Amino acid sequence: MDAAAPRFAMVAGEASGDLLAGLLLGGLRARWPGLVAQGIGGPKMAAHGFEAWWPHDKLAVRGYVEVLSHYRELVGIRNQLAERVLQAKPDMFIGVDAPDFNLDLETRLKAGGIRTVHFVSPSIWAWRGKRIEKIRKAVDTVLCIFPFEPEIYAKQGIDARYVGHPLADTIPLEVPRAASRTALGIAADEPVVALLPGSRRSEIQYIAPRLFEAAAEMNRIRPGLRFILPVVPGLRHLVEPLRKLHAERVSVELLDGRSHEALAACDVTLIASGTATLEAALFKRPMVITYAMHALSWQMMKRMKYQPWVGLPNILLRDFAVPELIQGEATPERLAHATLAWLDDPQRCADLQQRFQTLHLELRRDTARAATDAIAEILAR
Image (cartoon, rainbow, N blue to C red):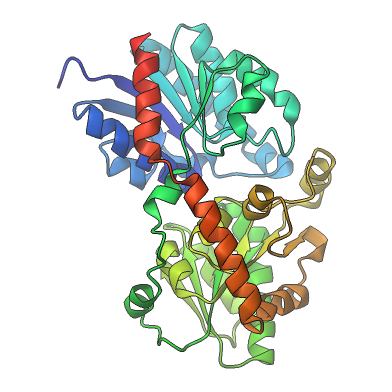
């Protein structure tokens, strides 16, 4: 092993965090081929030589009520991880998203003398703004993926750098629509709706049934539609029974992963709020954003929301550029009609795609290199 190569501890939860962390690790390993990275992560990180002590899907829980049922296990993992990292004394800890897990962990590690970097700012501009005080105690530097975020931290005396969004680098400016359709066996003129219910188990539980029922409604109104649903590896056994229960007479093709191909190939997507909505925007896809969770979790989150928007494309554009149907509004009928409306309005689709193209260019910054430069600077202090 290269003695000059740094050692990193890292934590990334769920599929979106694994994707972002994998892209970051690619940049880090390009600079330090002999680096060691260990902690909690998934297959995208493993592809860059990451050693996972626990799998990333252990952290794939969202919502207050949902977290309570996993609380003891999550706290146990965090305590064991903290002890292991403090003993190993890596050159830096990098927490990738997952703020509810990572910020408490980072606070403990920073107090123990380990440099801490948080990659992907918590959405303090959207809700839970008081969390900035916890961030101050927890991290040395925040690596921000949206251009307006560093100014928020600067006002509070917290070091933060804008590094762009890594997805904007990896997703091509020109959408590979034809190639993706060929790869998925979809004809050029076939109307396609992509269903993306999310990557967490709780999202499958609360959102997937609504999407399947919306697909059944769309199929009733317009029988010629084709439906595709990318399934996160390991969750097919949860999705398959829901398809049979809620859309037995509709042909919904389940794909093993391949969400980027599905987004590139589709005409419109019905999609759960989260990182996937930004991916859809970068693929210039019209979309209907939805979300649903336990009723008590929703009541608690709703009270802390600062902005009228939930979906990232709308937050970044500061406009209801695409429809949002959340919780009680997310009925199968409303979801179906909002999705079909895109197919009936080519000019509206073209206008949206132009706005998404501009957004894509703003977020493109060679994130892996920019983040690696920032990390190298912190290590050199």
